[in-house]
Image (cartoon, rainbow, N blue to C red; front, side, top):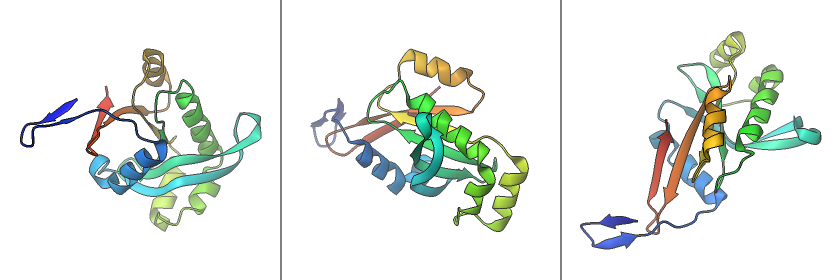
Amino acid sequence: MIFDIRTKEKNEETEISEKKLQSLIVENFNLFFPELKIIKSEYAIKGNVRLFGMSGRIDILAYNPVENNLVIFELKKEHSRNIVIQAIDYSDFIEENLELIISRIDELSIEEKKIVLQLNKPPKIILVANSFYHPTIRRAKRLTNEISLYQYIYYSNQLLQFEEIK
C-alpha cells in the first residue's frame, strides 16, 4: 500500500493487464528509458522464432544509440518461468536475421543501420514483470546476453512503481 499524506488516501496494489502495462510503458517510454529510442510496440517477427517453428511478437523493440544495439522488451503481467527463454528465442532470431530485420526498421537512419550491422552486437534484453523468482534472476545474470529485470507494482489510483532489480 502507498499512503498519500496530502489527500489521506490509501492506494492499494491492484492488477493490471499485460496490454495496459505495455501501453503505460510505451506512452511514458522516454521517462522510463531516456537513453533508448523506441522502434515499435508489438514488433512481429516471422519464421522459425520459437520452438516448433512458431512466429512471434516482441512486446517492445527499441534501439540504444549509445551502444548501437537493439533492445528487446518482454513484458509479463506476472512472473513466468519462460520469460527468459522467450526473450532469448527472440534475441537468437534477431542475431541470425539481423541484416533483414535492420533493413525493415524505418525508425533508424541509414547511418544507425550501418553501425548496428558493423558492430553486430547481440540485442540487450529487458524483462518486465510484477515479480521474479530467484531462479529467473540467477539465470538472467549468468547468460551471455545482457539482461535487465524490472519489477512493477500498479496501484489503484493509476500509480506505477517501476524499478530495476540489481
